[in-house]
Image (cartoon, helix red, strand yellow):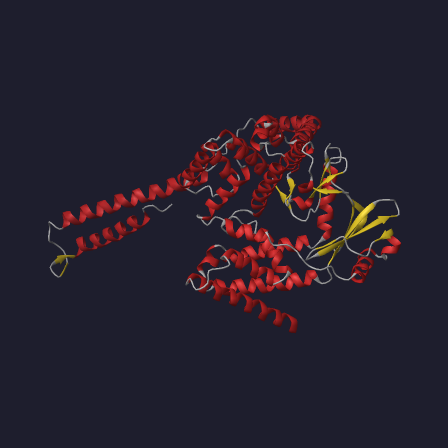
Length: 525
């Protein structure tokens, strides 16, 4: 509790200092650094948990302008490794045996260290060269504490800031917190690695090193090691076009066949093996696309290559980026301007990821919540295009998609599961048709031939007819009361109230009351 209070005071003090700096900057008393750089420095100064928060916020092009996204993407996990003894103890606790009983060789000096985990090299008794990823001791509790404090701070500040309320800042932090929890469970990453390794096992040019079965837990993951160079260190111009094509092919398969994709393809996670294959690492961030989204994504890509404004607008709405009730005319000028801008550029400068990000930013003006998986998708497209241009400056993603448009659409629209369902239903029908026919014939013999008509919406229609008829009848009665009262006024007979005939007065009162009821009923169902 003592540590939590101290941490709360530290977080509050640093946020207060940032708010004061913002005030001075708005008053032009200070001029550097930029607000975006100062915000990134704030998160960096708050430690590993907030660095992770910043890295996740770098996806939120729907919330932050480009200069903030650039600074947040620069945040790196530059921390010292933790003690080897702690890593050894965690491996024994998680896997039930000390490293010397699990591996022929275990290197206690880590290969790399990050804010949440570090990696050691080892060799199994089966002869596999592996890496052993170990979470930092207590990191899950630390992240949980810091995110709880972050939620509390945002909740408090939202009472004084309309901007935080408008962009649902508390919900954003809660969403990042949930994503961090998944990232801190290495069992989830191991499942992702195993799934992708199986999907690409027979694909030429791509290697995804699998996890070692039975050697993964919440805090430890053992994975086959791949030797190679970072993709941005490849100097051979001969390999560039080959690797660019392999990367595009891999992501076409992820997007349109698997429905899941590696969500962080920066150069540090892409290696080139000694035999020239592309190896993907670090599946902590994985995006998912359901079948309708895959269809809409294929439509968006092809519409963009065709520079068809209306088609881009339709596919954008199909992606779920705007509400169906949103006025299409409000978004059409944005897309038309974007298409016009790209039409003036050479095709080698066209960027699908940039266009995607631009439209997400446009949605920010409507305060429409953009699904997180589509934000991950947008950032992934940008990273892929940057890597492809680095490998082969002449490579055009749009040309490649245009050449493969038929394949992309067929892949996106194919649905093996529906084929299997059709086969199943047909098999059931083939075995059940005799029983169903006999049952139907018996029912016809006993009850005669009957037809049942069930019109959708008929009960509602009947109710509307009854209501309308009642109102028409009430209107006729009201009209009759007005006419009767007017006729009786010509014969000033019978009891009177203040020299006014009583019976016409009663008729007028009822007529006015019915009129008020009819007026109130106008427009109501």
